Figure 1 (tube, rainbow, N blue to C red):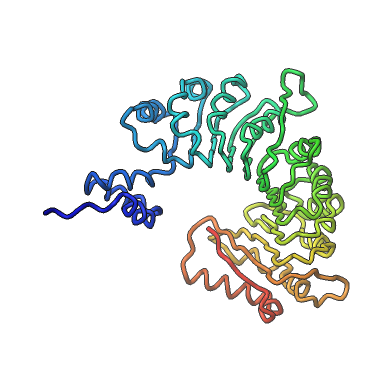
Figure 2: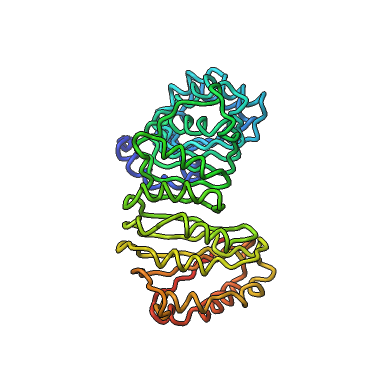
Length: 394
């Protein structure tokens, strides 16, 4: 008598341990018919849509024999998409495939799609097919107005985290009734990343809402002086809601940028701040005329958060000359500041000073060790007190 097959429930339980091993799942699907159902339930969880694979993907998703659509959790729509391909993407009849997997997608990324030349009905209908999206990334996109960006965020009522990078729109002063879109920021949005865009316009949109969007984790990227007034007003309104803040300065005058931030952004109001990250703090890929540290130290001295546990500084070095630029920097002053050895400053409670060392290339183990030893030597007091952590990022 042949052995009885394992129950499907047992197979599913076993296969769940392989959820992070797509190659193994794909191989198991070829072993026997009984393995196909259990393996396909976990593989794949993400798909990439490009102008080159769009037609093939649609045929696959519309097939009555498809097995992948109900398992998709993440979709990356990667360009560049010109006006023609964008219209094909957004006006194609997606009803059948969206009905089959739209409700399972939790993460959506849009790259290099220009919404400024598309009718709102076209992309809104498409985006409405993903009602459960919680994580949204918009990268290298053009919009007709900042309100159109906010309207796009509002298409996802379950949204929890959003990242806007290299996003462009027209000056709000030139808006007309035809370019102004209604919007409501999703109430569950708690994490926001803003890079290479006009932060002041985003902040003003948030401030205009009847119910202030309560962002707990905010990454502002590189901040310019013209952004600081609106940022300061929003941070002040957030008050104790804010728990994590990241920003930096990378212009020719980072010291001046840090001074503007100090004058316009009162972090003393953010009394529940747990983490503060300066990224970039020092970027040796960019020529600079001033040192931001004197104004950064003043900003840190204003903090009144008893919840603060870590302050991070991202240092961007050039692989071909990692230490040449570092030698003359004011590391010793930073060391005395965080070790509470400067009589004119008062450091808030902080249990961890982290230096994130960024490079443009992979480092040899010897070079990593050399840089670690050099930075440790610059912070002898913090190292002795157990405050210092050095992390390498490539």
